[in-house]
Amino acid sequence: MNPFEWLGEVLGSIVRVIIDSLAWLFDMLSGASAAFINGFARTLGVNSSWLSIAAVIVGLLLLYAGVRAFMRRHFIAGVIWLLLGLWLLSALVR
Image 1 (cartoon, rainbow, N blue to C red):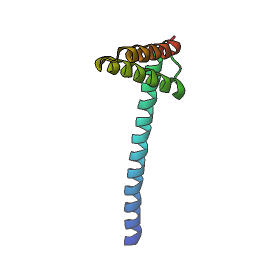
Image 2 (image 1 turned 180 degrees about the horizontal axis):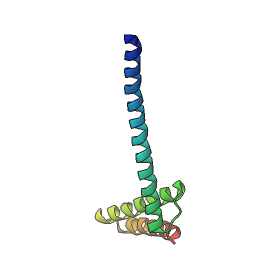
Image 3 (image 1 turned 90 degrees about the vertical axis):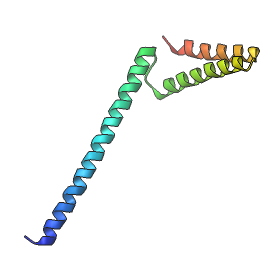
Image 4 (image 1 turned 135 degrees about the vertical axis):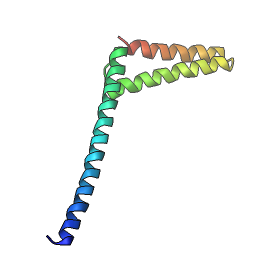
């Protein structure tokens, strides 16, 4: 066997192991994120579409804005933000 052929096989094997390892890692991360989104959506009773998850996040941000407004003693703004957040979340959650 030619030494350069052997060197090519060794380098090819190393590259193949790296590629297979990265494919396994990204597949595992993809499965974990999909399972998280499905569990999150199932617990809340919403669809697991990206639009529903984005709407839940917007609703939580509205609630956060309401709490911050209360902490800054802006009571009217706090009530408005909290009502908007609760309205959005109550429309989503079954």
